[in-house]
Length: 411
Ligand code: HEM
Image 1 (cartoon, rainbow, N blue to C red):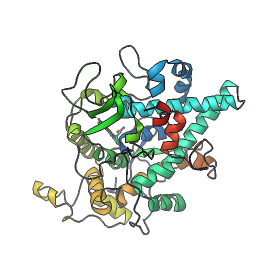
Image 2 (cartoon, rainbow, N blue to C red):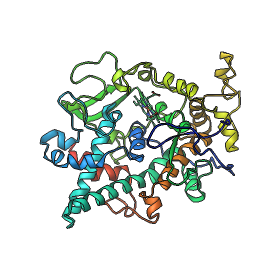
Image 3 (cartoon, rainbow, N blue to C red):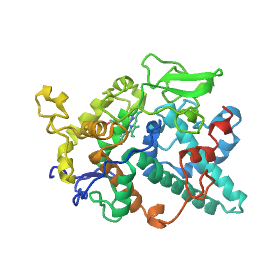
Image 4 (cartoon, rainbow, N blue to C red):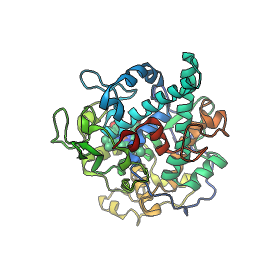
């Protein structure tokens, strides 16, 4: 396998070698855009990632429709995932219960879908299968819209999005029906989000007996049925998320995110085993990622930059790695390189040329290769659900339609 090849895991099924590689050459690159300040969007990015690849189970969402709408009081008002008697969340992927923010977002998606069902029924669509297929399509298309129009512009920059959408992918070009998740995306570039996690968050404004609930994202000393940290797995009144901290509802409550750089928050160096899919160490998240780099034999950041024909970071840019005596400043693990590039080239506000193109091309490429996605099915489609700006749709509109916005919740 040549250095710089983009290898992949298929979207479904076991990993296999020999998938399409990075192809073509990058012609020109703009770094001049200044995006909106990132809000605390990143914490829920993995959910967006999982949803993008269809892992969320809308069939299940429909199955639970009656249960969700019949839930009395606080649970239904605030939107929480349903749990089994032992606390296990009933979600398509257990990782969506890693912490309360992502669990709350999962619940918001279910409520969104169920509200689309209500809307369709109120409009006269009553046949079950028809309601289901329309609700599924409307939900996924609105979600895909905000991935392309809000999420990607924030994280990779508008000019990168324009370049990929307008001119097509240069490197991620899966053959028809063979979409895959490149290992460079999975094990390195898309893990940029690990750098954006803060040590602690204000989960809501009034959930803790009328006071805000602040908590470390993970605290090894937290315990009990309502731990003092924000880990998932438990339901309690203060564990419902107030989205005004994470998205800008225009009420002055939104908090800016941590920038993308090579500093990682301390709690991610001591993960609770429950936050790891197989519940087994290592508990240091960067160690897990760097081990993937080694065991999956990923190309270095510099190798990918050469392949993309963009100027690579210099050894001086990565001087802190010089002291290890391993030449890491010339051949840098891709994950670290992507973080450093974002820090130096984009001031930590978004990904740089290598990370941005890798993430942007894979996300857009997957949307293009899914015949049911609006980009492939009807690229002129525009959002139709209620929004503040007709024909557009963003996360604030999404949360509002789901009924989990601060006004609907009265908090
Ligand atoms: C508190 C927040 C987060 C925690 C505790 C967390 C934890 C983890 C853990 C334990 C893994 C498995 C690592 C391994 O075994 O190699 C992982 C993988 C991953 N994480 Fe995160 N993560 C968080 C946030 C994020 C964010 C914000 C993003 C992206 C924006 C992200 C993207 C990924 C990706 C792409 C993988 C690889 C998934 C796979 O291999 O299937 N994570 N994360």
